[in-house]
Each structure stands twice: as C-alpha cells, then as structure tokens.
Image 1 (spheres, rainbow, N blue to C red):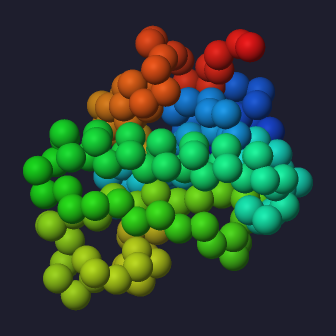
Image 2 (cartoon, rainbow, N blue to C red; image 1 turned 90 degrees about the vertical axis):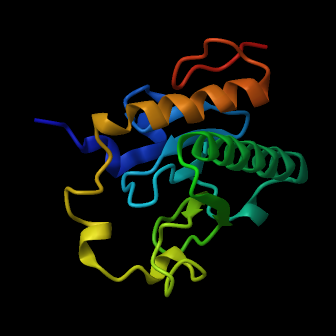
Length: 171
C-alpha cells in the first residue's frame, strides 16, 4: 500500500525527502511531476516556502529566481516531451492558485493527438472525470522514463550532472 500522507503537505514532504513526485530541488522550490499524466510530462514548480501564497509575496530577487526556475522546468519538459513524442506541440504555463494555498505553477505539455475541440483550450476544460481521478492517468512506474527524461533535461539546463531527486548543490 502506498502512503499518500505526503499529499497533505507537498512542500514539507519535499523538504523531508518524502515526496515521491520530486524531480529536482531548484533554487526557489521543487520541480515535481504531476500526479495526473493524461498529458504526459505534466509538471509543477512548488515554492519552497508554504507561507508564500502568490508570486507578489516574494521579494524581487526571490521572484526572479522563481520565474527563472519556472522557465527552466518548462524548457526541460518541452525538450523531454519533444524527444519522447513526435506529436508534442508546446507547453502551457499557468500560475492559478485557486485551490492549493501556496505558490505553484503548472507546466502542461500539449500534443497534436489531443482532440481537435480541446487542443487549443485550457487543460482545465478536460471534463472527463477519468482524466482527473481514475487510475488510468495516475502517476505510476510506467512514467519512470518520462521522469528520467525531464530530470536529465533539467540537469543539463542547470549545468549539473547526476543529480538525484531532491538533491541540491551546496554553496
């Protein structure tokens, strides 16, 4: 049985090394792979401070660091998804903050194989409950190659080699 307690405190569990979705520790937060993979490569940048609820809560230097990490994660997702699926189109980036009370940003890969009536719309308009709740698209070991590809791309963009999930460079 998988212990899902980390879901109740995604940021704290990432700091403790207990969040299994963490791909890499970045300067301003954690790059994580999304719990749902109906669009393979979906990732999220979590702030490293759960008290930060919006981008404007950050002082200017931390705000720039967060946006820089967001751009790096988005580019890593883009590169990995393009390498793994020739139908990859682009990534969409969203900072919404309507449900979870901490700063986080969504990176959604988009593909040519998506239905024509939805591919140009926000992913939140995917209405089928199976996309959001069922087992079919839940993060699972079958996504390990995708996780590895995004991690490798992040390492390359960050100038790191052989980083493990959650690892950070020491100053």
